[in-house]
Structures are given as C-alpha cells and as structure tokens.
Length: 162
Image (cartoon, rainbow, N blue to C red; front, side, top):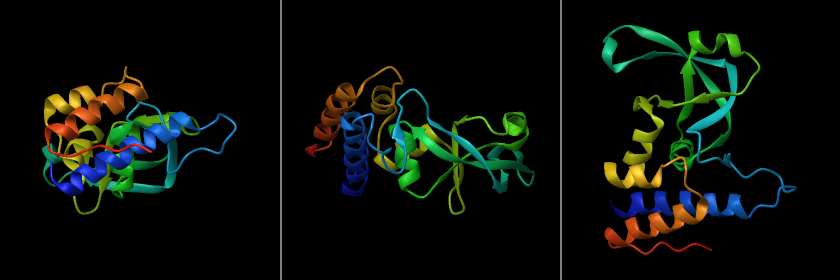
C-alpha cells in the first residue's frame, strides 16, 4: 500500500463514518449512501449503454448499461470516486427497467471492465485477506474503522477519522 492507496482507504472509511452519523432527515451523502451489503445499487441509465469487451471473449463485445448509483459499499465508493461507472449486462437488466438493480462490476475507458471488489483492492492496495475482512457485507461501520485502522497500521500508516 502506497500513500495514494492509503488516502483512498482513509477517504472511503471517513465517508462510511460520515454516512453512519448522518441523520435520517439529512440529504443523502455524496456521491452515494453507504450500504455495506451491496457492491453498488441504483437505477439503469439507458443513455449510457456501453459495448464492453469482456476479458474472456477477445474481440466480442457485450452490451452493458450504466446505473445511476444510490448506494454502495466501501469498495463501490472507492471505484466511484476513481471515476468508474457501475455497469450491469444490458440483457439481464432489461426486465428491471425502472427498478433498482445491484451491480457487481465497474468500468472505465482506460482500465475496462472489473469486479467492484477487485477494483477496491487495486485502488486501496489491499491483499486478498485484508479485502475479505474489510469488504465483508456483514460488518458495521465500527468494524470497518477497526479493521481499516489495523490494515493501515500494518502498512505503516495511521488512519484518522474525524
């Protein structure tokens, strides 16, 4: 984990804490609200249909549609802040036209298609075991802070939450 990756971790954890502190009558946080149980959640944006080449199909592209995110987990927030779009295969989402849908993948033009979990690992410089602990969908914000503090310390950094 380098300093830039630590800052990604620091910012994502601070966002989760801020979301947890937010009163239910306050406007939603930006860019999305925290929901550790889902990678990303939102409505399809039919104006953003992308032809994306999947790594295993060399030369064959599949239609994906971006979703306008409303909620996501720590890894989802990291990907969104990095400029990625959350995407779902267009053929699997057509029947859910106006209903919220969960995305497990993100995309950007430079890097291509990637799982949200893998993108979070890359952005924060986490090992697989660190990601398993930090991205667990069953943990709360206090657990996220505790785990992230330990991970940061293991890499020589001090996580500071305001």
